[in-house]
Length: 340
Image 1 (cartoon, rainbow, N blue to C red):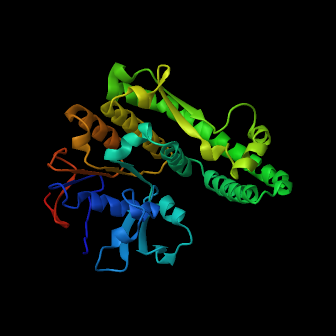
Image 2 (image 1 turned 45 degrees about the vertical axis):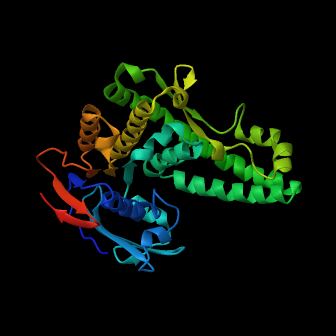
Image 3 (image 1 turned 120 degrees about the horizontal axis):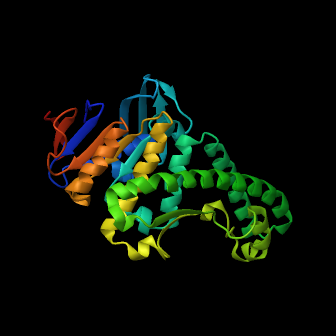
């Protein structure tokens, strides 16, 4: 099925019954930006039973006002990306050209989920605000893969040379993340006050690097015997986490599901605002927002999103949006009809 949309540059509301395909439209935008879905890891599930490939195309405008044509094609494990008619070698080139933030019903996992979720959150912001980040992250990831292979094979003699590279890149990656998380801790507080009031006023945000005590080089040396025994690197930036505490307790242990959603919304908006402040205007996708929040929180989140002067997409079962400066689309059984 082919769907074409001419969205509003400010606000787009997609409404219709549950199961109509609203989230699938947002999913297409996420796939174009990230090369993967937020709902499945299987590309075949995005294609459907009658086709062998799927394609997503968009015209986007960068922060300088220049228009670009983006496209992504997926077929099984193969992908092909294009920008302005030129083939791309990395998905990250699409991500750079199409910065996108998603808030959806599972966003509370940013608080209650595995550290992997929070690391991805940190690194999304790092990718868009710190241009050194991607190169450092790639060098660290390559060195980590080589070290883990050596550990599995018991090649202790090569660990000194591998640890020199891993330690240098891991420390730099950690330093970059620490600065970014410090800025998040500062910026999220006024958002929490606005969204959660005094109830969430004592939330503390802290960065955990993935080891304790001393430098990363020292941690690698201390843990070498244990790493050899386990066949993997047990400490380092690949174990980093964003600490979220309510008083002396973990936020995930004491906050209700609703409070976790408010905290997650504040974290996502704070990071998107940081990206916007640096000139990029991320597209903001707010999936099923009205079912996640009461009317007061719904309006507050939407108001903060629109204040970034970014393009906002909202899905819901009802037509709930400001009367001016918007486009409204009715979605049913995968068909999209522009109403306003």
